[in-house]
Length: 581
Image (tube, rainbow, N blue to C red; front, side, top):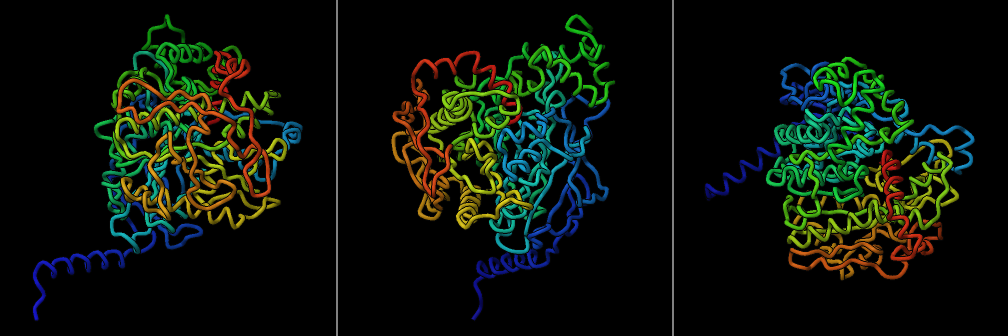
């Protein structure tokens, strides 16, 4: 009996896919637009092919410093054994031993802070490279792709941070993971008036275009790219949804603790004039001139300086101004805009599925950094920091998304484990970035650092599965994932509390419980977002407890102390602290 031709065709196609997958050799050479890249087996998950340090742009050095990135095209061989250089970054706080002791920092906290401070990094302006983790020999022949954008307040950060290694996600979730570097600080976001401003975001866009054009050769599906990031990386994802609203390349977005609706100079945009002031301040220190100098002469002088001297000039200027952590996304009305709230109301962003959220006690990290500066602030102060910097922008971004009929999911991260704690007293709780070691399965290790708990392992697996499920099918995937995640509705129990009381799964709550004082009602849309003004005092992870959520902190929906936090003074402090996001 013969096989019908249509079934024969399907069988042959399936067999060809299986043959292609079965022939994949770990670390095999992959021909890309950048050249022929040789990879290697990942260090732990040895069935994963790891390709590191692939150039996607011409080195932005010499005359190419402070210009838009240019694609790197070559047929040469590339050794994908090592990560590329880190892009020159702003300096972090370097506390002395006495400050560390006074801050009650744990062994894991020391390792985490050293990593965030980029201790031991090798820096160069020739830093525009990307990395790929893939496992094509099993699973889908064309896998969903997760593209990671790191945070760092747009002044620090890199893709080779051990916390961001993609081998576990690629191994366990049948996806391809990509990360990349982008220019930071004054090199990525210069403030001079006559040139291209948001070079770091253009670097990101070029890297995403490279993924679109090359990822199929690594077993990825270019039609299923999800951008995800944390802090400044999360805000970057959001900037892309507005800048390239009609052609985001991605089919979905994940935003972890960051939005364009954040405070200006933190994760939000700064004005052209403000950026120009920072630029001229640095130029003055370098003896390159000021705003009265011919712009071309000033730029030529700045290009003649080493990157080390430029960064030193910023630090020097910081003695009399706020330029140390100020260079970031700048309004140019092309890539970065001044009216994001209005654009969001009008729905002028990519209307593609969105998963977003934040940590329960973002301020836990910044409280430690404050202690290094000998700053002492109240619990109410840090609650205001939480709301103004993260909770309210996230609530508002979710509201605008829902009002434009975009499938939207929202979470709040409560995970606080022995090997992720920064301090003993005060308890750091679920601090800013604390979900990353769990999500990527790269927690601090060694010495006196505790091992993963069983709950931490289970929650990490659940979280990786959720992120991958969303990437594979962003419209319907989460709705059926291990009991299902409901789409977010502010007035209903649809906020997913991750790691709440160390539980695995989607523990649901009313989003307004945690949005104290956040105004998310607005004109326009279909009105489904409503007003997310909270009431009562939610529980949080800011204090330790035995397997349960911690006691409530002071609510911030009113009172003179809270109002003062929202003043210009508090915003100024936000600008300083966000340099470590």
